[in-house]
Image (cartoon, rainbow, N blue to C red; front, top):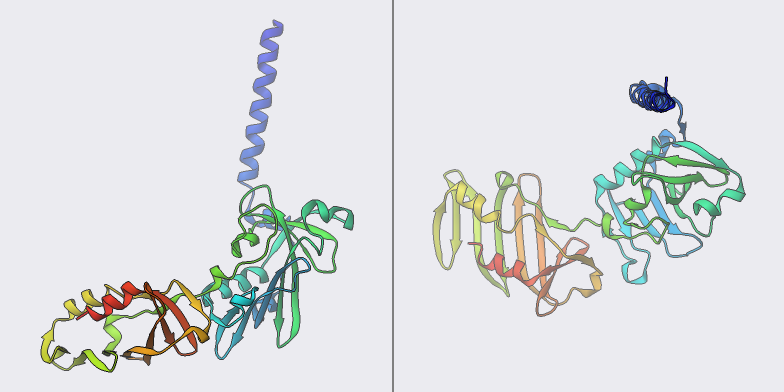
Length: 309
C-alpha cells in the first residue's frame, strides 16, 4: 500500500471516530447529562419575597419586592427609586429558574475568581430574601462560551460553575462582563388591558364634560355621546376598543409628576372597576394615574380616546 493511500485511510478513520463520538454524545440519555451537573438552587429560593441585584461594591441596588399583594420594583438610581409595577410573570420565572439552577464545576479557589469576573468587586450580585432572612446570594461573572450561559459561584464558596443560563441578559446586560442591572425589563408598562367580552361600562370625561358613556345592557350596547344615544353592535365596540387597548405607557414616573387633573376614564368590568386620571405633562405627552402609579403616555393616546366613539 502506498504512503498516500495509508495517509488517506488514517484520515478517514479519524473522521469516522469523531463522528461516532459526536453521535454517541447526542444520543446520551438526558438523565446522564444532568447527572454531570451540580445542583446549586434550592426549592425554597422561589419563596423569596424580595430580590436585590447590584454590581460589585455599589450601594445602588435594584430591588424587587412583594408588597400589597403584588410585585413592585425600585430602580438603582435616585431618579428610579420609587415603586414601579413589576412584570410579575417575569419575577416568578426568575425565582423558579434560580431554585432549579444547576451547573458544571469549572474551577475552584480564589485565584480563579478574577479570571471569571467573580470577585466580590466585579461580579453581579443577586440575593433573595424571605421576611428579611437571606435565602440565597449568587455571584454572576462573565458570559460563558455560548450565549445562553455564564459563570457563577455561591457567596462564601470558592467553586465556580458554568450554568446553561445567561443571567446577565435577564437584567439587560448585553456585554460579556457584569454591569449595573437595569430596571427597565422588570417594569410593567401596561396601564390597562381590556377584554371587550368582560366590559360592562366605560365613561370618559374631559375637563368636567362627558365625552361618551358606553354601557352594555340586556338588548346590547348603548352609546351616549354628543347629546345623542344610539345602539352599537358588539363587533363595532370590539373594533373600536382594539384601537387603543391594551393601553401602554412609555415609562412609569414618580407620582410627584402628576399635575392638575384634566380627564377621567371610568371602566367597569365583570371583575372590578378602574379609574384612570389624566394630567398634562408636556406638548407631546400626558401623565396617567392608576392607583398609586403614574405613567407617561403619548398625547396621541388621549386624542384617540377623545375620538373613540
